[in-house]
Image (tube, rainbow, N blue to C red; front, side, top):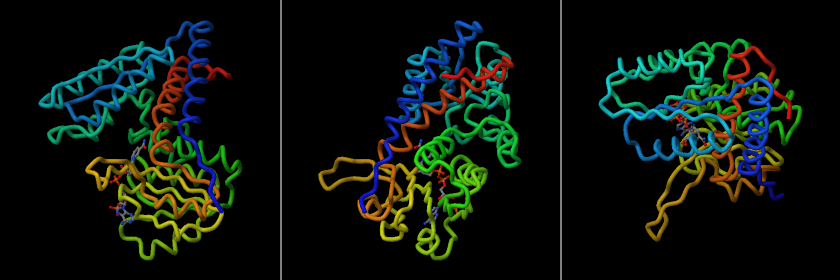
Length: 294
Ligand code: NAP
């Protein structure tokens, strides 16, 4: 068996196109221009790239993009003050504070200062709670992207065995919760899991969100399973250059799986597309209107 490649780039492009159409409808029919504010503290190179891409994609979709850059030694109080102003600004429908924050700032305090309605990252404790209790909150972007790809591929996932490797608050736990909402039988694996090979081997759906290059061996994958690789690991090649690889041993896994996401080009591109989509959702909810159908 050779797995189908789940093309996250193409999927993300389609979502972005739909979002741009929704923006036109919101402008024409409701006079709303969805706005996303992104706050970047410090000069972490990876964060700078993400923020630049987010701003570019937001503008390309026809939305307002508000970029706030703060020096690495900014105080927590100053950052909280900015978040408060963005909460109160009616032109801002979504707020994203780029993580990680410098060590002297309490990340949880900043995330929980964002108005839950504008928390497009879905990390606020109220939104995690709503996700866990079946309420309607903002859902984290990368996990939502994983589920969209799975649903597109599998349709009804009811009763399937799903294994999520990794239990972080930003990826593993929300992915597991979303799979449970899809009526999967969910196992969460982590660094203390005994015999990961056996746990993975019984799964119809494997989501790897660990951050360890090729931790998941291809031979562990059950024939016909669907594999979503969230991991992004930069490794050095023999020639000294670097390349990105996932948490799953791709070539070998592709011999067993029926479908698999590549790294790069799988889950990665979905995150920003879903962020734009979440900003539309937030803008519509704040205006008390239905999300436009396209
Ligand atoms: P994280 O907070 O470091 O969590 C890693 C998880 O992996 C932890 O739950 C840890 O278990 C588990 N783990 C570590 N070693 C393990 C092992 N040997 N066996 C089984 N489980 C193990 O990472 P994260 O933020 O969730 O991110 C995970 C990966 O996804 C990273 O590569 C990150 O770059 C990537 N990512 C990609 C996107 C995207 O594509 N847009 C977005 C977010 C993250 P314990 O809890 O027991 O320590």
